[in-house]
Length: 583
Image 1 (spheres, rainbow, N blue to C red):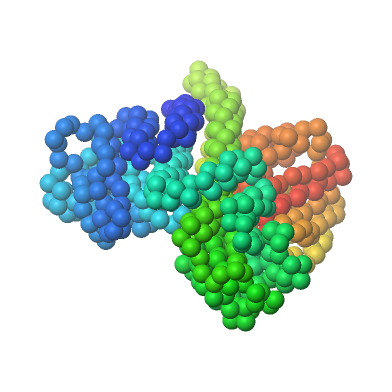
Image 2: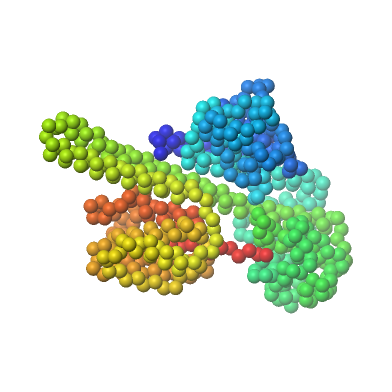
């Protein structure tokens, strides 16, 4: 990594923080697009930039904004259909940035692009898709007058910026729709305003649901209300109004099957469903025959149903327009609050990842100025000495040996940095992975290095976990290689591998009987090029455990270690269990 890209990173972080604060203060679509394009264009020495947005018909894009291009000049990025063979269409279909770094790369991939647009292609281009929950919103395009290599930090900046743009545009769309609803339904305004005000005081879902059912009964005294959550294959009541009879509450707490007709319809339509002439037998909900009308609203976060708001009325078998408006307002409010909480969690995770990346870049900067520069100085110094001592062959040979050793060390460190960089760039393909098979494969891989060593393996039955198979193989390989390396002086090496089952995660454990380490320095264990033992004692690149930590974090897990010097070490890797889909 060049010193230039490292130096740019703090400015990227500052820009992300600044644009986040600006976007938080507006729901105006045009302002959002202008802020995002300005941030992208000004962060690079770009020739120009553009934003194209997908139309409501989903089959066309329209040029919404340009920056940097000369007024009236023809550019490649124009209104038009979403065709199969265009950079904009391909970026939205793949949902990945398209980066054309060298002159001719864009026209080589799309030979007729200049002819169709009657414009000249720039030297380098980045096409960045804006996608919100599987929905393509548009693209940001940056054009460059010179070849441009997009570094890892620049690509991370692109991903974070487009994610912020997508979330902000989503909120702008929600705000616009909400304004329309409020204007058309003045009665719903009261319900929405009261609920939103009260919702601001808590982030607990059940507290919000309790507010919702209380709001419904306060505004519509003749109704009963229930909030359900999905558990197993049924909707189970979690919150209800006090007027519901205890025996009915018991039935609702036991659960209503997902396949109950009106419940299924509300989930499929993703909007409020009003049921006239409630049929308890048809719905499969016992003891509810006295209700004349029902209403259901399913709350989603993304594509996952998280809760269901329902209300019933005994006096009549149909809903008035006022009652429908109030129910929809409360249901939508609850859904928006849940969606907002999920979005906040996503942004918090992205910001945390950005902070971790900055910390790692700082460590890389340190390594460049120390670990990598030191071998370079050796090469320079001893080469000069060798030239001055050319007449003394023995001295020349000794100096050149030192030069060779330093160069080899430098190559080792560079290779380690490249390996660590690749770990962060590769996309994870998550699925069910048998840890037993992973361990056996790693044992076979390590076998040739253990021919002259006495190693006892104590492996307990291991689980099937939710992970990327290649990444988990690398985690296990690094941990076992590390254990064998630091146990090399033991006449009888003992390696133990087992797993611990917790409700929300699996913990994989690896224990050795090697050199161990002082727990006072455990905080350095997973740092890049950090060592708790000297290079002379135990060789290696110094990034193996850093690779383990990065891969585990990408799985949203943790890795820790405990040890006593001279008694070995135990590593613990946690991997979250997948969320069970509600339906």
